[in-house]
Length: 117
Image 1 (cartoon, one colour):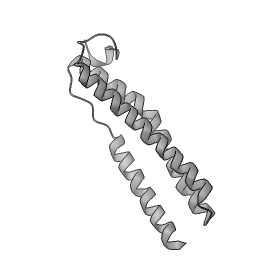
Image 2: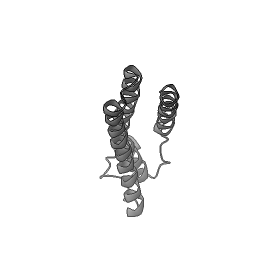
Image 3: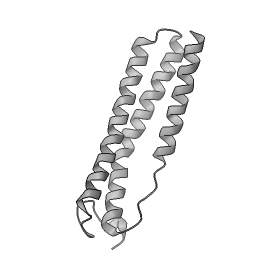
Image 4: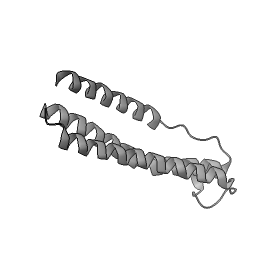
């Protein structure tokens, strides 16, 4: 059976429960990271008054990155679960690169705000 025909909880062979739970923990970690970024975006928007445009951009990047992470967490969990059931290699994720790049942008923007204020 091809991996795309298998559902996350049906077909294929049952993977070791430790791998299933590790996959679930990773999914929840992506969601916690998204929630933290959302909270950071709200905090920046509310607490960083000057310059207003820069803080709005910084808050916006946080919120957009949070939305991307939240939107891709479940599909990633599902692909990994299906691959484990099918005995296939685990799929690669570009989200690690996106998250790293997004955090680098946030760090540089925060540093610029600190220097300018």
